[in-house]
Length: 439
Image 1 (cartoon, rainbow, N blue to C red):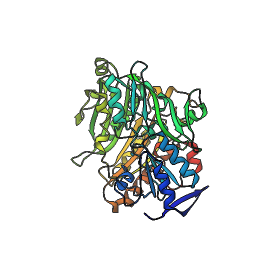
Image 2: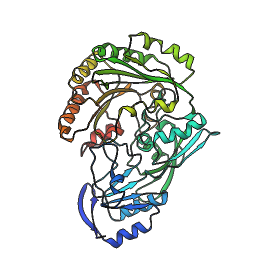
Image 3: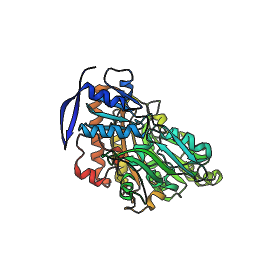
Image 4: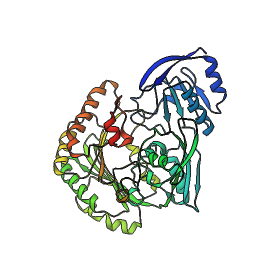
């Protein structure tokens, strides 16, 4: 092959330069995993992520087989000032996992998971998804907070905080993090935990992925058996009453419960309100506790029932389709006022795509009780995340869906804290220092 054009970085400026073929071949020879370049078999699969809007072309993709490959890739990037992105589970909606013209350090083949059922801990590598993680931990009746979608990668979700079904009882994903192995920009592989490199450990507990490449995560696990969980669907005409009930109900429930509420469109084309519930405790007690939500108003559909935890983890993901075009805006809310509900309903009535979801995701009681300065995720006082995930298939509809999403976010801004969830940031070329610092 010929010499390769690459994008390099100096401070905040980018420029195009050329890597000699001999330099690339030397880099490739020292990798245990594959090095992929444009036009080679596997290159397009490696650069493709869950969000169909992301169509970027790295000059080089290092498909790392282990920590040594990650260290080598980081050192190579630093030596040659290469633009770098890091891919974990590839579910990243803003597309930060893929860069144009630089080096993508791809951890998606690093899938080792080792459960210690006696200590109730697990160590998992950076390419693992929550579905893979739960498959191993549930073999021992154990789990930890891991989002609401089995296809999400453990890495980015944890590094940005990690809301999830179990957060009411066990806190966020980052609250259950015990240690990480992380390759820093100088090419060192460090262990970070509460006593060793403690400041770095604080940063990776909700501060995002720019502190280094985390090659493995160690988590605290908890006994999690069958859960009482599932969705309730209500017609959009009753959205105001449903959302008000959800607001009041979600403030009163115990640690064992967490919820998601969303506005979306049912397969029959009719807009609906969905309340998703997960009760992690004794099933009989859960049936009693959830009586009010079933008695409030007859739903169109009631699918709350005992199920494996792995099944509720697939609930949200079953409503999402890889390869669709995705755009998200997100913030946090300390309360859900009547005016906020009215504004949301008014705007959702004009939603341009039947696949789009606007959701409230409850932080969870245990997550609320953590000190705001205990981790880099500092939004401990909030009730929930407010997110608008616009989803559509037609590339010619990009502008109308993005405009609608931004308009909704602007209309709801006065009802939010004004601070963003790190995991949902990154669509714009420059988020701005103030927004990043606030997050």
